[in-house]
Each structure stands twice: as C-alpha cells, then as structure tokens.
Image (cartoon, rainbow, N blue to C red; front, side, top):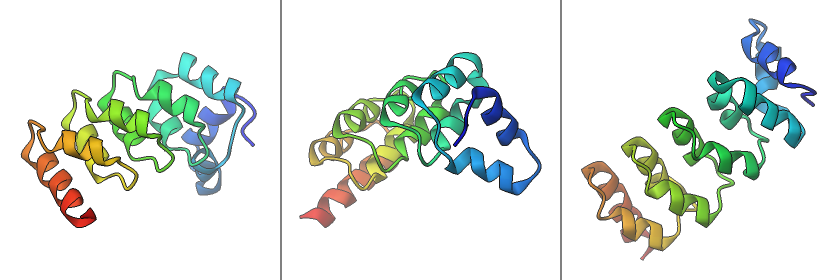
Length: 133
C-alpha cells in the first residue's frame, strides 16, 4: 500500500521497474490520493492511471484542466453512467472518443455521441449502437 504522496512520487519517478510498477498497481487511502492531487498537479495523469484509484478520485480528475488526465479517466473500466455522461460532453475530442469506445457507455451516451462534432467519435458511437442491436 502506498502510504503518502511523497512515496507515490518517489515510486513514480523511480528507475526501478518494480517500484515504478507499484505506483500503477498499489492502492492508497483516499487522503493520500487527495494529497497527491492537491500538491502534485503534474502527477494527476499517473493517479488516474493507477489500477486501484477510487471512483471518488476519478470524479475529481474528470474535471482536470489537462485533457490527457480526462482521457485517462475516460478509459477506466469502473466509471459510472453519470461520469460517462459527463465525459461525453467534454471539450476535448479524444476524451469523447474514449467514452464512445468505453464498454460500459450507456446507450443514451452513445446516441448523444452520434451527433458529435468529430466524425471519428460519431462513427465509433454509431458502430457500437449498430453492433448492440
């Protein structure tokens, strides 16, 4: 378990693959994730990348100003329909594309994305709807 924001940053910055991997795979208390978000904005992407990051933290990061962070959030399996709906309206097309490709994207979200401004998002959403019947 990751015990502090400093430990996460150290693991993430390590040249040792085992330590580096811990930053992606080990859990931390909610307070630790919040501390990382508050004090290390450059690490938001890697927080979202962590396999155990709680949904509450993903909800916070879904509003991050960096589209790469929001893209990583949109790629997570554990997202709720509400969060997918929020991300489907994102200003960044890569985030909307990640939602269109998300296995748990609700039908209504896919229907919404069929009217997206980017053709690739529209095509992926239509294809997903066509395959679902």
